[in-house]
Length: 150
Ligand SMILES: O=c1ccn([C@H]2C[C@H](O)[C@@H](COP(=O)(O)OP(=O)(O)OP(=O)(O)O)O2)c(=O)[nH]1
Image 1: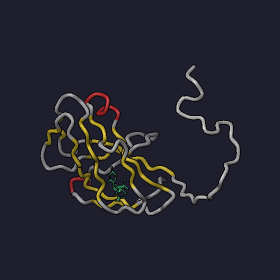
Image 2 (image 1 turned 60 degrees about the vertical axis):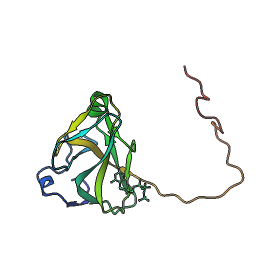
Image 3 (image 1 turned 180 degrees about the horizontal axis):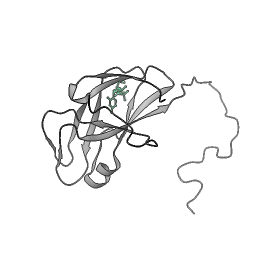
Image 4 (image 1 turned 90 degrees about the vertical axis):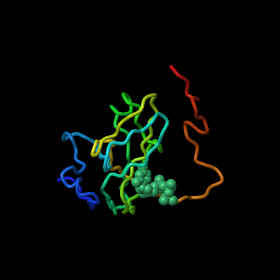
């Protein structure tokens, strides 16, 4: 049995269209566009789209992330204006999808279209231990390609 998270239905049309896993192995739950009528998103335009639901994760060792759907992103250029949406465990408001048409043609979003996906991820909250020097590590300060390409 999956873990249970509180969910509020803010738009009655979502009652029969709740986020669900499409297959037993799916990681993401599709989020729908709770809009009233078709919306044309012009190239370069970003729209904040309501989902008609709110969740309260409550457990600070979990968070949710909103990610693009691969097909929409790859074929239609519909991705997220914030690239990734991070949903805090104490957020109780409606989930919104920042929807960016990064493509070259207008895109028509229809009511209840599956627009993005939500994943639930573990989170570790940390404190900071202030030091003057770090313990040595194999990488040290090397980054940004320091290990080469091949
Ligand atoms: O794509 C998103 C991203 C965020 N949120 C909601 C849930 C999240 O918990 C809250 C705040 O998000 P974030 O902390 O990323 O926003 P901020 O710009 O840093 O504003 P704030 O000052 O409210 O934290 O907004 C969404 O509905 N969709």
